[in-house]
Each structure stands twice: as structure tokens, then as C-alpha cells.
Image (cartoon, rainbow, N blue to C red; front, side, top):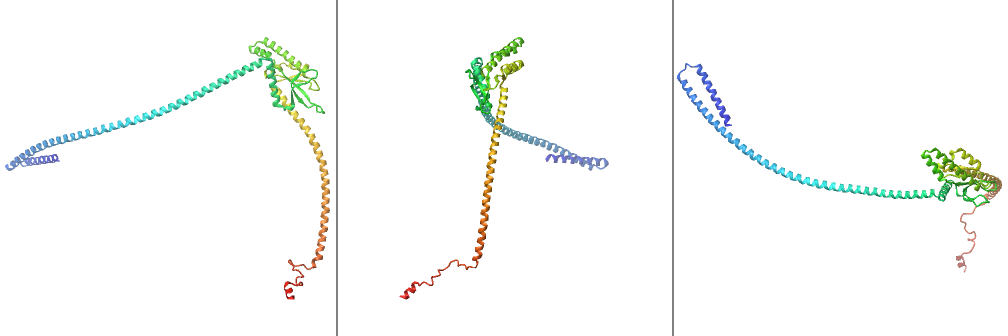
Length: 404
């Protein structure tokens, strides 16, 4: 503020000097009084300038001191602020370090738990897989054992025949009832040979059944030689193996014809069951073989599928025959019912006649009742609670006393 006043004063003094100079130019011819005033003004101006310079010097010194004080105060404030900031930063760093440690511990704990869980699950999964592999190995060992047993069965002639017979028996048990077939049946009286199975067919009117012989054969060695030759692509070996198989099948068919076909106890033909569809396909591929066996031996080849279809057809025939027999029985029953119903109608007519007679009797009784009612209409009715009519005529106890 002092500096501003000094500047204003200096400006005023300068303005005053300018005015004086201007006036001096206009009145140069004036007297010496004016010159004296000018000297006074010049001296006053010099004093003003000197005071102004001094004041400005003091102002500069005061400004420098104030600036220095402000710098020192600002420096102290900055130092305090820096200390506060350093303290805050230090606290923040410590807090961050603690939080990071906590987060690290939490993350480590979570990672440890997750890792242990995942490892546990992985080990459990691996253990389960190993257990399954172990079970699979056991199953494979069992399968290998079963395959070995099956191979032993198929390589042994006796057991192979038993397997074929078992397969045939399973088909018959699935398609027919136990009363519709027989096992190990003797069909000829002149021999002790027994056919493996025989299907019971309806016979004559006397009720004697007719049996259809079925025998299972499985020439596996000949069939294996044929399949091996076919796999190798050797046409010569294929033809030789096929002829050998054909000869063996003819021998089996002839054996069945001689041992088991015995009309009229049996049908005039028999069935040769081949338990393998491949073997059956090879047998029926030779058209001449099938025709010769049917003509000469009266034997027909059947495979598992063909036998199932044949048994199904026989089953349908059995049902149709049973329906026919039941139909005749039902017809006879209906005839009997018709006769009895006629008798029932006669009895019902007699009962109706008796009821009509009773109704007429009831009408006569009703007429008589009305006539009697008319006759009694003029008779006086008694009251509902009548008094004894002789009570007033007989002496009472009081009268007896007075009489005495």
C-alpha cells in the first residue's frame, strides 16, 4: 500500500512540474518571482524524488523481507506437508504390505485348498479308472477263460454235440410249451436209437400224436477248413472243402433217415438242425445238395432263424387247431343250452299259468270281500274302548256293606 501511495505522489509531482513548465513557456517574460517559485518547485521535486527513492528502497527491502519470510514459511509448510505425506505414504505402504500379506495368505490358502481338492479328485479319478481297468482286466481274463472253454467245447466232438443240442433245446423251450415236444425220444421199436428232440403234432381222431424228429449236427472241422480256404482265396481248396462238407452233411442226413423216421408214428420227413447261420448258408447254397437230401433222405436243413420261423408257424397251427376244437365244443354247449332254454320256457309258461290262476282267485276273493263289507255296513260299530256291559248290573263292595 505504501508503494502505491509513493507512486501516486510521484505522478502528482511530475504532473505539477509539467504544468509549471507549460506555464513557463507561456509566460517567459514574467518576473523573477515565478523563477523563484520554479526553484522551489524543483527543490521540492528533488526532495520528493529522493523520498520516493528512499521509500522505494525501503519498499524493496520490506518486500524482500516479506518474500523471504513467505519463502521460509512456505518452506516450513512444504517441509511439514512432506513429513505428513511421508508419514501417510509410510502408513499406506505398511497397510498395503499388511493387506498384501493377508491377500497372499488367503490366496495361498485358497490355492492350497483348491490344489489339494483338485489333486484329491484327480487321484480319486485315476484310482477309479485304475479300478475299472483292473475290473476290465478281470473281465477280459474271464472272457479269455470263457473263450478258451468255448474253444475246448467246439474242438471236442462230444461236447460240441452237447452244445448244439443245448442250443436246439433253448429254441424249442422258447417257442413251444413242454407238452408240445419231447426230448431223447425213441421213434423205432427195432432199435434203441433216440432222437434228440421230437415235436408233437396232432394225429388221427383216436388222439394218437405224430412226432416230427429234429436232430442237431455240427461238422465244425469241415466248416473251418471251408472258411479258411475262402479267406485265403484258394478256389481249389474251397471246392475240395465244400465237397467234403457236402459229403458229411449227406452222411448225417442219411443217419437221421435210417434211425428216426418211422411213419405213422413219426412224420415222413425229419429236420437236420445246423446251429450256425454260416454253416446253414453254405449248406443251402448248394441247391443240388438240398434237393438230393430232401428226395433221398427226406431230411430238411434248418438253421436257428429258419427253425424259429418254422416253430412259430407250427405254434400258429396249434392255436388254429385248438380254436377249431374249442369251436365244436362251444357249438355243442350252445345246442345243450338251447334245449335247456326251451325247457325253461315251458316251465316259465306253466308258472305264468299258475300265477294267472292265483290272480283270478284273488279277484274272486276281492269280490266276496266287497259283498261282505256291504252287508256289514248297517251294523253299528263298537267304540274303540268299550266298557263291560254287565258292570252296572253286578253288586259292588259298597252295596255288599250296606246289605250287611
